[in-house]
Length: 232
Image (cartoon, rainbow, N blue to C red; front, side):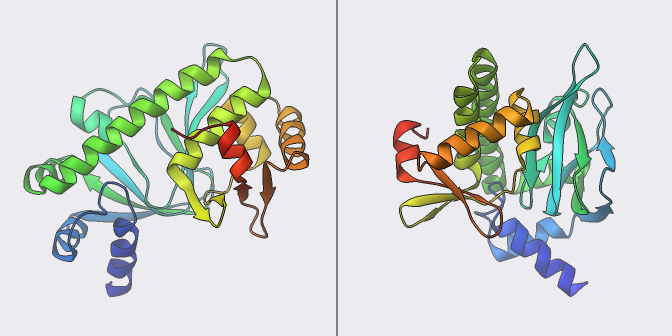
């Protein structure tokens, strides 16, 4: 139990919403969470269903998706450790706006609606962190709309990477490492392109010196990429 609590504290400290809380405040948060594990491909949120939980990823990755009029799945975003979702339906009382599925074995901290409301009412710093995150989500939604308006692959991909660099970028000398691992197929599913087009564009950017891939399979973006595709 202590090991699990320490793991939760470590994740919360690096979560955009919880990172400003003190150790005692974090302990209060974890006293109100319930930990669950999901296998790969397990779906635990369904578009259109009612929801009574907020979810925080302890480890693993999930995809957030919608199904279009033709019945095709559209991936809106991929999230990893420290990210959360499900809060919107707790705040506005509406049904889920998307479905969520585990992309690998994933551990989730679940916060029930009544505990979520209690934490917001008793932790002002948590409320401020939530407001900042909602602003980020709004900017992300605007970026998705902008991305869909473009037809050319480099424009679509540069906007997608810009968004993920804002969220998951880590400076490493003159470059930025994207700390979330994305496959070419996952990038294609998020950008509305076919995998072959993503691969061709990424390879061209590698030839141009805009990006490399490190030993862990993570994208590393050069200063020249950031200059040509400015980060918000």
